[in-house]
Image (cartoon, rainbow, N blue to C red; front, side, top):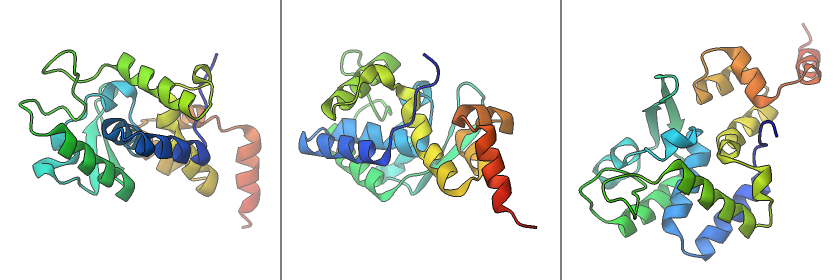
Length: 189
């Protein structure tokens, strides 16, 4: 068991390619939002159109108050995600509810975290990854793990995840003593 690993960039691109090829606009928008927003599944499925695309046009940035912490977490909406959102919103059409990812079985409600997990399993299987090895938190971790590997900036990761304590971010990213020593060695004062 333990923490599920983040996806690698090649996995992200593989899933995106698959979803585009299968013309699954909603799933591509959901997957891209998961990567960009870095939200827990319970917060991701509750995104509203007004959070990311007020007036129908996707924003460059958004902020969502996390259910667990009650803290707002800002995130950038990349160009590829804005494109996916635009396509999904056109397909979704006007609705009386504001859910970005509405539940087709329960009108007026959003998709459930269980439905999100099931979709993730489908996406992972499509690119021949073992769904048991990954979870919805893998998508939350993906971008911040890459940012940490490229920059070593724990504070930036902390802000992006909405963690109150840097220690939480260290545990979340699995920063080991070897990483800390390697970063320290890079600084020549």
